[in-house]
Image 1 (cartoon, one colour):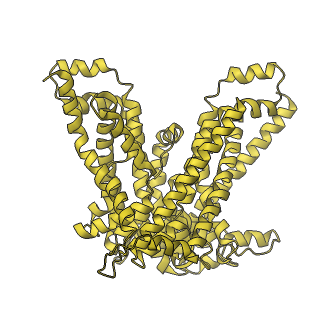
Image 2 (tube, chains in turn red, yellow; image 1 turned 180 degrees about the vertical axis):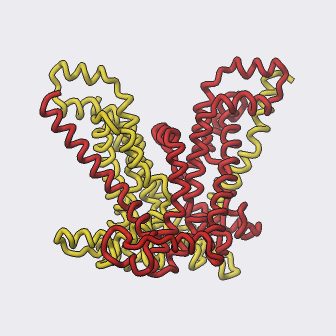
Image 3 (cartoon, chains in turn green, blue; image 1 turned 90 degrees about the horizontal axis):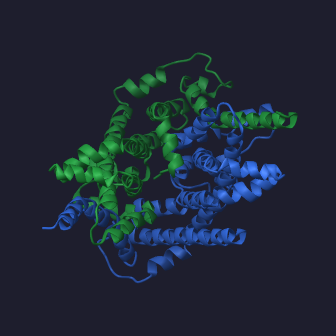
Length: 275
Length: 297
């Protein structure tokens, strides 16, 4: 390696490391702040002079804290929508990839074109609909707009096309029912794609803000992001509690991220899903 | 029944529920919003009269809406290109290094997968004025003057924009890096043997081959920034888009019109204007990139 190249490489590492600091520092600062009490939080210096778990006890275990309930709500909403998306998106993707029927192209185009409709416009009719149906402050009300994701349909259809037709036909000749073919033969073959879709959908729903903010007006039905926004808006200068709440909202995602980093990186690289 | 017919029947059965969903939860509501934007629909009054384009006239002459549109365009026109340029640069650097590539990439993705609400409040805490804000504490330690960040009508928009850029950076970098790694290396090697400089290789080979990905990211990021809502809601005082409406985006305006003023018809009209802007910007980008791609050939 020439000297020039080495210097270039050194500069590359230096820039990338500096950037890493910029990306990580806010998380570190949040974490450090969460171990400070009401007076330490305003003292200069990075590290807490007398680290305390009080904030976590107040947020997670005190009787009047709503964080545990919000945590549960977010877990329920993210899990149920993800289960629904996995089933219907792969079913739709499979049908659009492996069946021939009149109107197939139009249906595919219709599904994909829904990606262009901005949520900001849809929330208004959704809200009117939820009022009429009395879905306000229910889990179903929070979840129904996300039960099927058009992006997931697109993704699953791509994967389904690579399944050999012979395999499906052989199962048909053996007398297997269509739904059983889908569940027992097709789904296991696309499990990597399912894993990617699952993790992205879970993250997306865990982080979702605009619609849950509108549909949940009672604190007991807030999701974690809505609860955190509300709590922080009212906490005034209790930054130590706000930072603890933020940490609590992030920890499950950071754990998921570390476990499923491969699927996440692959998912983004494949085209990237958001929102 | 023939096999083909039977298969078609199965397909329709499988499609039944999802189609009801897409019509009932996407297309139906879209049409509903379009129709109701022509009425004086409000949750506070019992009236529901057809008023033609009065809602559109009202929002398009509302200085607050015009200001929010201007802000939205500023978020998109400043934000999206910065994200694209920075992430391309970072991806090229990542492609060049040998060790710790995966680790760096992982660190950069972290802000993208964490909740925007939580991230917004962390930055709001860091942006505080002296002596509370850590950023201002660092500046003063370096002998720099204090920065107002979120409380200044001139700086607040860019302070929020910076957070959004920080969030989207890792996503775009990952997409670019995946794109760079599909470029055939023998192509680059051949050019090197023919005496092409690094600069020439970049401009003549790598950049044109990355054109489709750049277009995809420009459009996606453009839409993302045009719809910006969550960081503004969480980083401006009382979620109002202040100071002095200086950070209010069109999405926040629509939210306030619909869910704090309950003027649903007017909010629908505003949301259609935003929809139209998103469509125009997307089509414009498609055309510009099309021309550029054609010129290169």
